[in-house]
Amino acid sequence: MKIILSGVKPTGIPTLGNYLGALRNFGKFQEKMKDYEFFIFVADLHAITTPQDPLELKQNIRNVAALYLACGLKPENLTLFIQSEVHEHAEMAYIMQALVYMGELERMTQYKDKVLKQTQGVSSALFTYPALMAADILLYDAKFVPVGDDQRQHLELARDLAIRFNNRFGKTFTVPEGLIQEKGARIKDLQDPTKKMDKSTDNDRGCIFLLEPLSQIRKKIKAAVTDSDACVRFDPEQKPGIANLMTIYSVITEKSFGEIEAMYDGKGYGDFKSDLAEIVVKEIAMIQERYHYFVSSQELTTLLDEGRLRAHQLAQKKLKTVYQKMGLGR
Ligand code: TYM
Image (cartoon, rainbow, N blue to C red; front, side, top):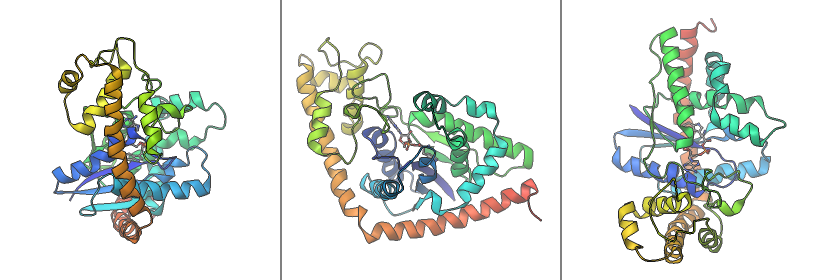
């Protein structure tokens, strides 16, 4: 059995970045990699590494689960589940904490960035977060992990921990590999194209949320920061704003940068942005329609029930092996 695994944190509403860097790809990989089982989960234990309102969290968990299906995942070969419903994740995370070094966690750039923003009340779970992520992956012996670029370092750590465990206790874990797309793996903020588009942004104008009103999405794209050059050309160094918009355009339409440049040759940014706004709105309108269907459907509830059972079966077995190899218990 070969497994592909990924997760999304239910903190707020997923963004266009989450969609282009991750959610959209899950269904595409499913079409291409038919002999793989897909384990896709809502990473709710990851969400509580920063404070969450319980009622909002519950709604966000359901939203992310529904959005997986709305963004193209199919029920065939799919184990869809909620991380906290499979208690082995938390237990395996503890094992990973015993394996990982403080220095390794201190080097994680996402942690360093978050601590810069949140100077008070930083939880120890925010620090050990990559150990939980390694646990998620290694519990199921996932071969491939489709993620955006910001998870690259966490994934690398999961690989190191798998290798370390195997060296110490004998071959136990599959060493996972990332599936990071060349385009769309790091969508930038529309107001500050030096930063990644992030759902926990201070300025909502730079971030497109998958469930926000379509009229607002149009406005945000039209107000995106560009430059004074007025030429649609892909140059991430000199023209990061336009390069980001071209990336969004290219991933959704599957047109190359060269084709887009040729289409807008001699035209200003106005035409380009208007067209892009319609392209994005059309894509998100379809997602929203499907989301509204799935979010209150029995189909989703049944999938989550079945997913929990299947995930638990595998996780339980793996954790038992790990405990045995480490000499824990009787
Ligand atoms: P999260 O919830 O922050 O993001 C979910 C996915 O979206 C990708 N992503 C982006 N891609 C392109 N452009 C962006 N601006 C952008 N922002 C986010 C992320 O790379 C990710 O693939 N720790 C993970 C969730 C997780 C996980 C796992 C993933 C927990 N355990 C095990 C894979 C395997 C996270 O917080 O993702």
